[in-house]
Image (cartoon, rainbow, N blue to C red; front, side, top):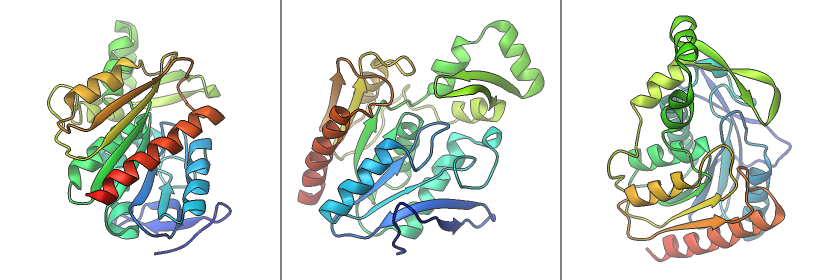
Length: 258
């Protein structure tokens, strides 16, 4: 496996020629894979914290930019849950060995679940941070007016506001339609390992109830939802990161004991 630090940019080239930028460190024990959120990237606060955590504890770690994000190739407008899940699978299959624990933030929480379903033999633990499965339908499409839906269907895209950037950004109809093929919260989610779902009670982007519903759908008997009373969507404050570290220690211990 390729080693890296936070100043390097490693590139994984997929079979279709697309490139995935990633950061990775080697270590011992179950590996950790961080999956960033929508319009985020591998260099965010939580990814940096996890990189430091794994460096200090000697654990394997990899994080990467999904298609259309950060330093990876592709246009965001063409992105989809299926495409981003395929990115995650390629990273795991190519760059990692042995059991893995996935940490998914927001949209990355949806990708985390789909990846775990596709690699049940490799993925042994999950940590969701404001995980947002099914958000394309429940949080985007269902919230649109009839006029906005007409624009979406006619133009194939719709400009949406974001709390994390000044400019509007385009959401493609591809994302919505592909999302419908990847909905998870209308049926059991077969996963047997430990799952920890962290969510802020004052999350303005993804309601905390989504994590509760996700916990109800997961078939694992070892699922815990932790609600942070004053926590917002990104859960990136020092206390939030301490909670993430404590959660990681718990999940890693359980996975190691399996």
